[in-house]
Length: 219
Image (cartoon, rainbow, N blue to C red; front, side, top):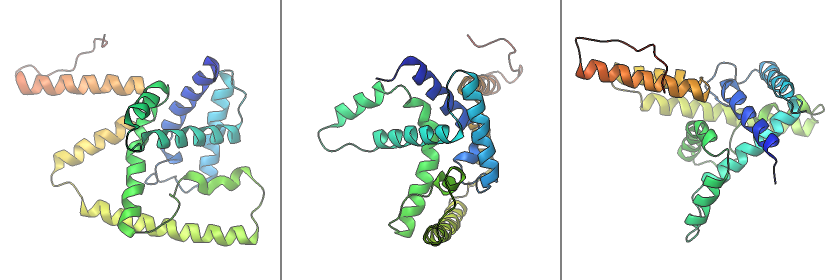
């Protein structure tokens, strides 16, 4: 059984990765910059180590990947007749809700793969694995080239899908912009921002003569 100290370090790892979209968001301008992402993992390892967990960058990356894989496994539709057990396992895993922010990125990859009717491994941040391994062999280089070509194809298809489903009005565009900003916040700040936005919208809708945002802390 994982001790509380390990669970705490894992929770901190999830927060630190969430604050760095370049590690998981393919739309981020730094997603393909291996050196930039390596520095991010080093930053994460430094913060984790300062809080008591003896994890280097490679260990942080491996633990993140294992946690993410477990979340993806738990959220998949369970076999017939085992739904109750699956839901109970989801509730019992302490990090399940913390991983919800990844849903939009996993759904994007699934949408693109389905539209192309391609049977392949989901493109993820595994492409920079060589940062923590020895130099690739010629065979590995050829495989990497094929993966890169597939990634470019998926990226082009994803871009086409996004254009096809572009929002029809500026309100939807603004809403998406706000959602993107909120995802960069740590959970506590994100929830606080949501409450303040809801309060402002309520004030505007029901009391147009007195529009303000309260400076009082949310209880």
